[in-house]
Length: 412
Image (cartoon, rainbow, N blue to C red):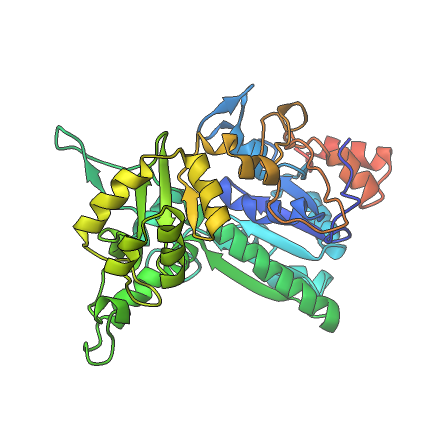
């Protein structure tokens, strides 16, 4: 059994989800906060269970994470009785999420207008690769396409001259669902006040670009004359490369080798820089290179960089973090996706939800509601695992009616 969540700030909110693959993460954020998410699947199920790696005891980690805490019901929407069941589910729901190509539900007679006819306050959100408009709207794609489109991934070449995809964090496939979840909640909030729902759409490609707004908008700003758009005062107003590309020549804001790893030094404010120099007993460094009050990275000061390189090798990363706390100067560890789980801050903030519960060890939702426990997610469902349960508990169908629907093929 996987009943609807009984705690969390979204307890009492019901979402009907029709999804394929990763975009279904939109409702994962909502279920983690207590919403009842009912995933409506075709009889053959969402093939997300077989996609990517690792495969954990026969099911993909992608499925185990994206669909945790949800209930699965199978409906063959080619069957009119199944369409009627979908509409009944919508009647008591707050939102419908179409996480697939736009118009997929409309082809089954379940477009926004029809859904709104049975529930005027329904919020209908479509999340897709490139959105409902534009020349790419019908182009098939997977998640990394949205990052390459947005300019986030820079192609690299191996020793044999073959181009390859470098390691990078996926942006669009996660940012799209996150922004979509925010929009759905905005729609539900207004619908509960006014009684009128709305139709929303978001493209994962748009989200990837929006998450990189700083670099994109900087390049746009640089199209203007230098008399109007300059660099920072600490750089004598010389324009730097946009975003983190402009950090390469930094010295007071840079990664350094520690005795056992790496540390990120961030003394771009003059006060922090002075604290650091006093703390290591090298006030002479501050007196020689005091820098500007704010945003000074001591760019291209190789002499100072060589000094700092040797200084940072004298302590372990943990010792430098303790030093930063003691003298009030910003220092940070440099982790990898593999090593971060051993970090004490990670361990405090992310107590693993164990594989015994979810099928794989998973990170919890990263928002805390103080003085309230969020629901602990249940394992991602098997195809149609909760069909009978949802029909009985949500729609009030008795076993005889469920059996008849199954016999008719409506449930697959």
